[in-house]
Image (spheres, rainbow, N blue to C red):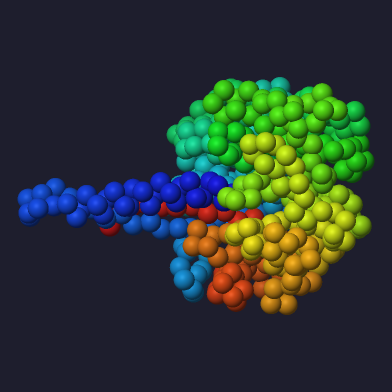
Length: 399
C-alpha cells in the first residue's frame, strides 16, 4: 500500500470516529439514541518466501506498540508474490506464471473471498501482475508487467468474475524499437487528485535500461490518457524520466511524486536515481541524481520534506538502511544503527508512523520496526520465511 492509499483510509476512518464521538456526546437523557464508539485496528500484511524460492506465503501482524507476533503462513504457493492492502482486505498477487489475485478478508485470514485470473482468453505467456493501484474502494487498476494493457478492476467485487471490468488501459505506444518481449514493463502506479500515474521501464532486448523510463498519466474518471506535453521531442503523451528503470512511485505531500529508478541491474548501476514529478505541471527534477551516488537506490520512504530513508544496494545481500534529508539529497545520507551489508527487501511506513523494514537474514528473518524519532529499533517481528514485501490493512468495528 502506498502512503496516499493509507492516509485516504485513515482520513475517512478518523472522520467517522469524530462524527461518532460527536453524536454520542449530544444525548440529553437516557432515552436518547447514541452510536457505539468505533475501534480501529491496524494490521501488517507481510509476503514471505523460502530462501530457495520454492514457496511463498502471507503472514499477518496485529499492530501494537511492542511485542508483535506474526501469524500464518497463509496461502502457501509460489515465491514470486506481493501483497496490496486496502481497508479490511488485502490482495495476494501471484506474479510470474502465477497470474492470480486472491482477495482476503483480514478477519477471516485462512480463506480467500475469491481467486481471479489475471489473463484474458487467448493470452499467451504470463501477465506477470505487479500491483493493484486503488482509486477508491470500488475502482482500481491492475498493472500487468508482462502485457501492454493495464486492467480496470473492481476490488469490492464479491465474485472473481466481477473483478475485471473488461476495460483496459493501452500502453503499447510506449513499446521501444529495441524492446524486451514487445512490452513496456509497467512497474508501479499511484493515484493523485483524480489522475493515475504508471511507471514503465521500457527495457531493451538484453533486459537493460538503455531506453528512457516513462510515466503515463490517465484520468481516473474517464480512463483516457492525458497529454502531459512533458517533452517537445517525442510522440508520446507521457513524462520521460531523468533516471532509468523505474521500480516504484509514491506521492508525498509537499514534495510530489517520487520515483525510485534502479538503473542498471549491476554495478555501476548507471541510471539509478530518485526523480520527483509535479503531479500538476508534470515537471521532473532529481532528488538524488545518478551522478551523486555510486550504488543503487532500491526503495524510499519519505516522512517529511526534510526526513526520509532509502534502501541502498551495493551488491547481493549487501544493502544498507540510510536516512537522508530530501531537501539536501545524497550529501545527507547516513547509515542508520549500523544496518549495513544486510539483506533488506522492503521498507514501508506503517499506520502509526514507524518504519517496517523487511530483514531477510537467513538465520533470523523478520521485520524490524524502527522509530523515526530517534532511529531506535522499537520491535522485531519474527517471520517463518523471508519477508519480501509489506503492506497494511485496517479493520474498523464496534466493540
